[in-house]
Image (cartoon, rainbow over all chains, first blue to last red; front, side, top):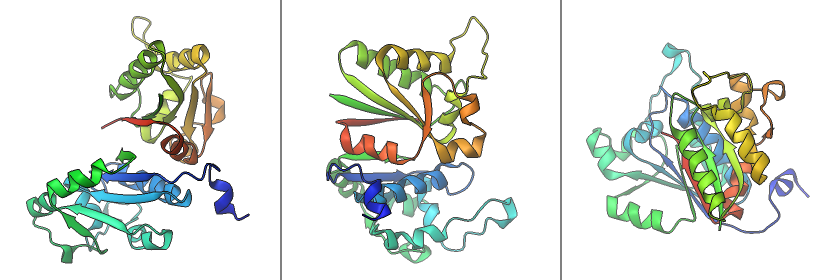
Length: 131
Length: 119
């Protein structure tokens, strides 16, 4: 049995977990500590989706450089998500538009959803955790 | 019905821990189950037994401890978040314990509802 197997709760249950990222990457710790939960949830072999909305879309922006504020730059982690089988990344169209961002400004491939599509996706989830 | 509760803010600065406590207490009084509360981000500060608020105010940490004593609620503090903030076994209030994020994920998997309290 691998370490990964031992981390499971043994129930064999797979639920749909959505992580709703609403905050800018820096300024508060929510984005960084939220990512840690996402990675652990994937290690439990759950069905993980990540949504980026409001200032959360800035988490995926290219060219983040946190040296000036002397805070760890964790934006590389988003590019490593597919290595954890986390491939369902969604961004909110209105949040992108309001900030003048397009998919070309982001460091990972995402699916852009309109608000009604996002609502449908949320309704399908078993667990929604918001950071 | 089993509720898991996630507390993401510290005591006093935010109402999140108060709201979570009132939700948990009320759910238990109404016969629902609240097997575990998980403390994350600054929520780990709720676990400090070093807090001594004025006597005419509520003691947020102590009433979590009492809820756990009365109802057997498992109060779990995230180890990584706690280490960042200086919350160690030596300062934990009664009935709190430090463990990993897996305990949070388990709540999502095993319980009927996971309710988040925070900003």
